[in-house]
Amino acid sequence: MPTIPLPALPPSRLSRGVSWLMVSLAAMAVLCALLAWRAHATVTHLQRSERIGHTLPQLHRVMEDLLNAETGLRGYLLTQKGSALQPYREAVSGLEQRLDDLVQLSPDPMQGPRLARVRELALIRLRDMSQLLRLHDSGQHDEALERVMGSPAQMDELRDLLGELRADLAAEQASINNRLQGDASQGEWLLLGGLGTLTLFTAIAVTQVITRTRTAERSQQRLRDIADHVPALIGHFDRQGRLLFANAEAGRVFGFQTETAVGRSIADLHTPEGAAAMQPQMDRVLAGETVEFDARVCVDGQWRHFHQCLVPDRAAAGVTRGFYAVSMDITERRRDEIRVAQSEKRLKAVTDNLPIALGYIDAEQRLRYANETVRTFLNVDLDDALGKTLETLLGPEQYTQRRVHLALGLQGERVEFDTTSVHLGRKRHFRSVYVPDVGDGGAVVGLFLLSIDITPMKQAEAQLAQWASADALTGLPNRRELDQALEQALLRQRRLAREGRAMAVLFLDVDHFKTINDSYGHAVGDEVLKAFAQCLRHTVRASDVVARLAGDEFVAVLEGLNSPDEAAGVAAKIIEAVAHQPLAGLSVTTSIGVATLEEPEMSARDLMVLADRALYQAKRAGRNGFAVLHGPGLDSRR
Image (tube, rainbow, N blue to C red; front, top):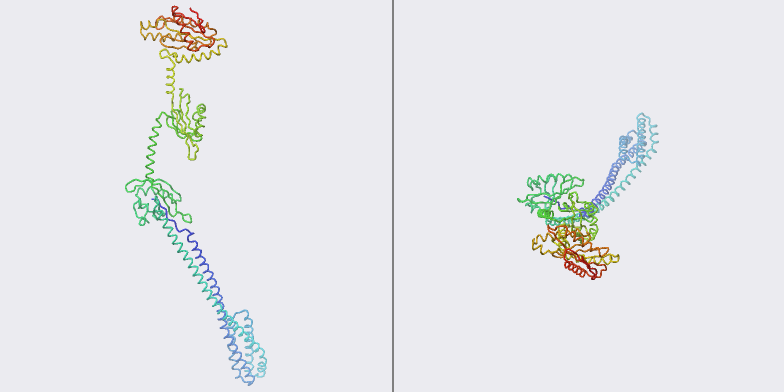
């Protein structure tokens, strides 16, 4: 079953919402970076303030120790008693360790040299103290006093350094505290502003996404409505052949609910035979090939025909993750095709058995269709002839007869004409009709050719013409043909008279022909007439016209005589030939009336009357002879 999925939400539908969301995330990233930078600076300041907080008490303790030591020294100067040095002893007893701790607590490059100097001076004082105590303990009081008197300068420097350090650290701590307060205020506003911006952008993005999603849902619903009303079966399958989507038409044809059918395989939706027939096509489309084919499917016990198209559903990486399909129910079309094919078969049977050559040529005069009669007429293999030009099939001679007519037909003119050619050793006559095939644009795209063998008709026409112009018994021209021949002879005599030539008309009949009919019967009489006609035809020249008028009356027209007297010689020759040749076994004689003419001043009728008069004279003279009349009245007898 064919399927196509409803389209997913177009990227353009969400682009604006995604853009706002990206702006929101970018703003959030910038805000986080700023807050991280501010937090790092704040931590650094706090760590510095903490170190200062540890350093100031130590400096204060060192300062107190130094004051106590100075107090002890002054008491020793006043009393010169060893007990007066007790405060000094206590002050300097842990001074070295406290100075080491102080140096480690404040590794500031700016304060390091001063702390080092404090430590150096303190250590000097410790060494002096040790010396002082040894001198005092050994009873060398004067030397001890002298050493005490020499130490005030070092103590003054030590007190000044400690005082400066305390003042600087206190000022730095105050500055750090002020800066931390300002940073906290700025950070608060920055955080509030960032959160507000983030909230705004996020709200815009969410609004856009929701709006576009609703629009997409409406669009999808419209597409589903369209798909459900398309007169085609539409669906979508995954790689395993499971149905992902089907339109209402698919459910109607195959009898399932589209919602409940989702997830079912092709094997569940088709008969086993139908599923097996689909498998090779599925393999092709899942290999990435677009497939089109016709299939016969059994639906509700009836066979139906579908034209199916399977299209791969490719992922972004080009992997085929399923396929779309569309099926058109072509059952009615297939039935129409079968009916048309049957009709064409019947029509071909009719056309192939017609005594008419039917064909079709294109604008390049190439044969595109021909019936069996064409094969018979041309004696060619039709399969081999199709596609060849008429000139190749007909040959130069026959093609030349049709060249002009083909050109007229391809120009849009209906053409009808007759041709004569020798076909299979016989002279054949054809009547051809060329009918233009005019395309939609008005241009002639080809010609329908119809050719009929009219040889029998031509032969019948010739026979009819012969019967119309010839005597049925003797085969000689009849009275109608004689009249035409005589008129033509008189016309030619006008030209021949200028050359001194003459013409003559001989009027003949068989002597006593009625007696022959009465004595021997009409059949013998007919045989006598036929034999007489043959004798007459063989006696005169081939160019002379010999005709039968009626009964036993015959006429001979002699042209191109050198003189009128030549006609008498021909008449005598005829009489002799008839008298010496038995006709139908009988001895027969003839009488002849000769009318001669030099100047063509007489009509055909008058010339025939003149010859008839001459025949009458010959009969009166005793028959078996001839009489001659010249021109308008001169005559002679034999």
